[in-house]
Length: 462
Image (tube, rainbow, N blue to C red):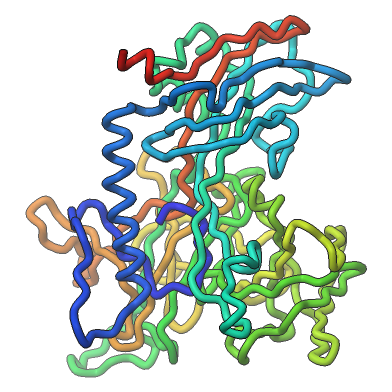
């Protein structure tokens, strides 16, 4: 899974390096969501791989996503996006005919919407990613005959046409054929997370008794959990614009539909089905909606001050400036619960990098779960992008987390110096995977010279 996917899942077991070709169900066995989800991921992986091998990095037939009629009326850039389809890395993207400025979620924070500079050139490109949709965002998913409960959720392919200024170093690059240069140009503007994460269940102090297990050791939770560590604010470690993170023991799946919000008081559609899926005083919650999701932005974090179970309302501490919502708000606003504790966390938890086995180099979550953002071996600061995340399955049966370990060249487990403890593997962010394709190049100024960059398949294959 490569989208946001804050669902009530067991875990994500798809791993392309294992080369599994199918999932085989057995009679009389328990059915888990992870098996079904892995089968879908395997199928999509092979289908998209075949499409990418045949088509290349990007391409399509007809006028799908063709850029046309560039205007700069009243200081604002606009153009037509033509109806049709286009493939990006094997993903089938479709669009209706629409104006650039009429796309859902517009304006995008990483795209230009103002009048262009006459002395510069600009790149129009397609940004493709998957968004997680539940019955709270699309009520048609819910089967009303069941009387209310939701069942499965959906992955929605999101296609956004964006514009950025082309750097001087690549002003004359042919982005249509040089995809490496194109990708470098895009990632310079919208940098993905380059940092990684390690996770472990805490190891207690060493004991001379070989069979003794410290009560401070390992995962001590009463239930199996899927922890989610997510970047809240983009940035670097220890720099201006400090990166921050938040975490959830339920994969960020505990949400409450907002009926209204004003003056720090939030009226909700419900307060959860039980104590574990409800809210408590001092919980941290994030206010999110469709527009924030489509713009790739985190919502404001606030702490719960009080709860009125009769009115099903929540009062927030130090509300400050918040969006206002009413019963008829079309953007499906939600209150999402996160499980970090403490005061003054309106921007999330400070991201601190470290290395080594010692406790001071690890960040404690709860019940023995610890995480570590490794230092860059080259000394260069890592970047962290809002919305990128890692998943940590924790299991009561083993008292541990399911997390791979580092291995030596001969396959043996790598341990810390002067220790028998294995080194947890530093894993890349599991988060939202974006794919990009060039569509056109625009010369700045009133003339707005347009150079198409789409790859037309019937021309390539004829």
